[in-house]
Length: 157
Image (cartoon, rainbow, N blue to C red; front, side, top):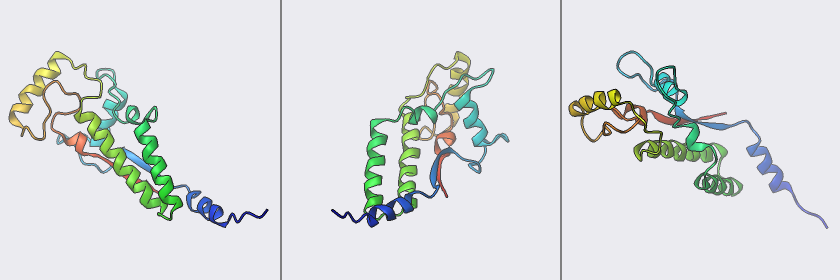
């Protein structure tokens, strides 16, 4: 019995290049308005510091792999098999990933244990800001909305 594996060989060649997608607050995402880059602010919250507790919003969005993420990846794999360019599939995965992280922040799915002083400070800021871009004073990672809006993706390779 002869099996023509040329389609499989072509598929393997298309996906074997070292392309991937980065999701997060990437360099060049702007600054906080006081000289700190948005990427630095994101790293402070993602990993914590001596005075700021860890509030991982990127790593916890993708680990462990959610069933929703698995479904998205399976659908894109089928699209690649059907002829979609790998870079297009990675861009779609990046769009989904950035949206997923933003929604987790908006839905308060990130660690929310804020210090009373932080809540008081954020309440004062929220009075000055437009309510459509600000979270409430008890919402972690949302003060002006700029960090959440800075979450993006980049296809590499």
